[in-house]
Amino acid sequence: MDVLGRHIIAELWECNLEKLNNIDFIRDTFVEAAVLAGAEVREVVFHPFAPYGISGVVIISESHLTIHSFPEHGYASIDVYTCGDKVDPNIAVKHIADALESSVGQFREIPRGMGPVNAKPIQKIK
Image (tube, rainbow, N blue to C red; front, top):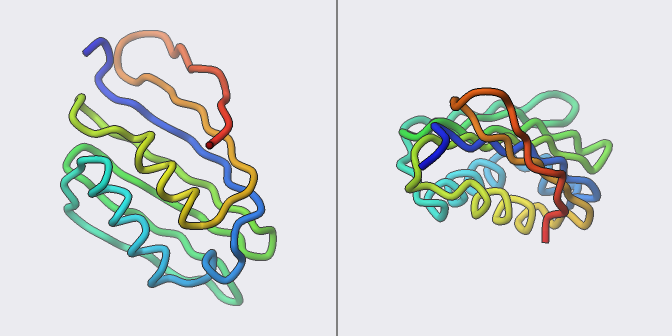
């Protein structure tokens, strides 16, 4: 492996508004995403905001998955960071985008820990 970690920053638009404000759905989706990607879940913390929106984190042995949802904009900011080479953060991001029914999504993968940042080009989530 030529990097210590893989960090994906994803922008999800035109998401299902109800799902973006459903803390149980988002928590379950993020735990599922971590497991599907091959991660070991350690801690799970999600917090709802009034009148709407959710922020949360799934701490994994290999790092973390986070969300900040903005139902009023149909938008979610997603962050998936994994260390090592056994976890695929792309699987987690795709699962989250599909679950939130995002019709417009982009992500950028940033290799971490091995010198100057050499971010991959922005890609559409398919």
